[in-house]
Image 1 (cartoon, rainbow, N blue to C red):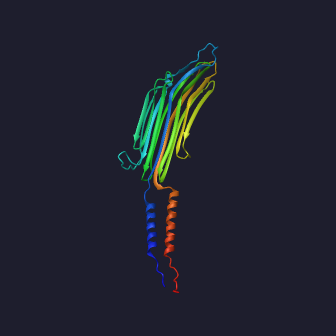
Image 2 (cartoon, one colour):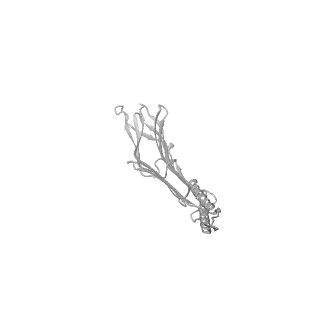
Image 3 (cartoon, rainbow, N blue to C red):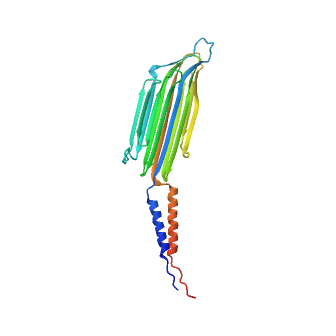
Length: 296
């Protein structure tokens, strides 16, 4: 008796191969998102007399002509606009306020599709009630390559300060920093965020220095949230028996970048190709002619 090949397995294998090929070719979606914030509340300064017996009261005098302050909000987008229309190029927007004032009230904000940035500073400095709020969001859902969004918010203060002999200048406030990155979908995603605060004071003659730096960075980290909170105390001391000028500078802000690509990740591609290979191997085995059997 001669055995004939069954067509059903070949049809089934062909159907599986077709589905696998379609799955491999189908565009994938990906969503990348990063959020950042820097809040410094109840900010202000006070002085301490390091030598109450020297007959000179502790004091700190700010030079008005050296005041510089700024706030900035910026966003960048490539992908789709607010109406869902594809953008063939990147859109960059930024708004900045800068002036010769210290502890002023100012703010800037911007938003594009899925991307926001806001920066504000203000409030009365008396009683340690001045504050900064810097927030950003970058969210990118991609169905085409090279879609990304970026935000940046920043603020700065700088001034020259004249310190009386044996004076300690103390800056205090409530600091909160956070960066969070999330993502979903089978395509490639990349999110990175940073939040920072730096304060520096320095005098030249005699040389006294003080620095404070805090940075959160998600580089090399799995999706999740980084945060830091503390009661800030930044101290600069003039131990000299003479009046001493010193420079003061503070910078704070947050930055975020999120990109999404509908191309599947290498591991996903490997699994798909392996599946197609297995299906093809099984189909070939079933299609190979079998030896003819003899009737008993």
